[in-house]
Length: 276
Image (tube, rainbow, N blue to C red; front, side):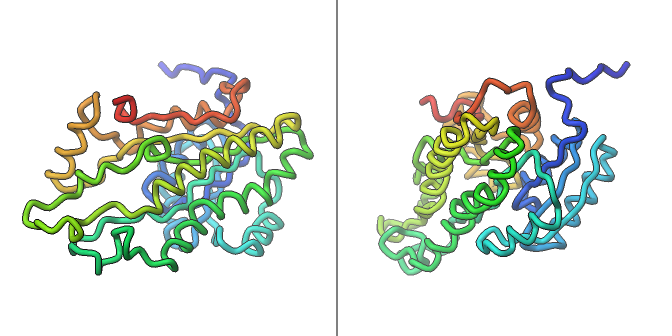
């Protein structure tokens, strides 16, 4: 027996644009919205990744349609060109980001530590993860405000409310503190900034019918090494990392009328990690 979708969650007739859609969670966001009837436009700087994600949505036989487009969120003209091509967008999910990885090589020389972090890399990652979200909101938000309806969802992280715990990345074979690998400075700064952007935009368009919220997922299991997983899960009250599909219901809630009285909020789903 198939249960009817609650009316407030129904996204039939809505058109959603998802940036960075070729990434790990981009596909999950698209599946979530398509499942509830939305037409999803999967945008990525790499068209092949966007096309693969769109194909996965179609193969899932979701209620909504899926298509793929190229988008460089760092380039205002690319965003404006896309807006002119796709037309009305009811839901914008700012998901594009560079996940700053911890390198296997130890030491300041590898550039992950603050003392040696390259300025060019700082600028690139902020451009993609934070400035890109602002630029997309700048292009698509005013049209929503003019229609007096629309939703913007910024994908942040549990690192939007806590700092990286560098103990997760320590190597026992390295005795010089300055040679220990670390999570770079950019990721947490960007995610904190996205929450600030969320609050600003929510206030800016408060009277125009545009709701803006953030979702802050915790760590998603994606084949990470046993030692890292063991260290991280020890910090999570629920004792495990998230499955990649566990955020779908939250996306459906935040992008639908089910959250009609909610704006400017950061929904943290991290298995309880940030409460300790």
